[in-house]
Image 1 (cartoon, rainbow, N blue to C red):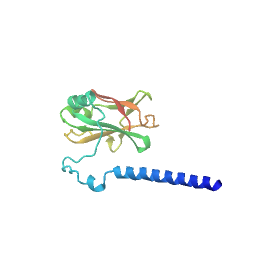
Image 2 (cartoon, rainbow, N blue to C red):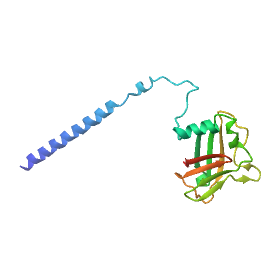
Image 3 (spheres, rainbow, N blue to C red):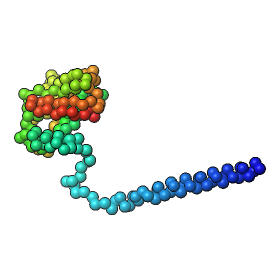
Image 4 (spheres, helix red, strand yellow):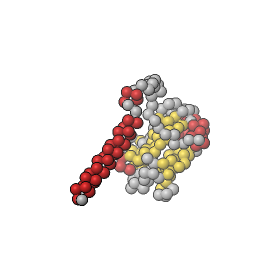
Length: 172
């Protein structure tokens, strides 16, 4: 009696093992072979770019492109949170002049933390921002001092540079 139970259990375990291995093999077979992936046409050198999601799909993206001549707005939490780096790519140099204007004081506002961050000015270097005449196709940046790390990753903030105002940017 005991022997028949042991045999029955071992057959059940063997059957379960066969079923599981069959499922694993069928899933492996469903994957694309490595040689098939290489048969895709390769992009031309000018078109090769890394994928970057469009953070401002729809109206907001069109607004920044058409009114201010910029896109790819981003905020990065850098230097262990002591600095927030704001970057943007210029599409139309004439429209983007406002963002590089030395007279316009950039401010980063975090309504949740109730703070305003400014671009620090170092004695020998000057302000930590690019203020050269903008050129189409180039990316420009500025660094906001986040002393005390009041602005955190994931916060929704506004960047104000003279009349330019980018609202709801997320700090990465």
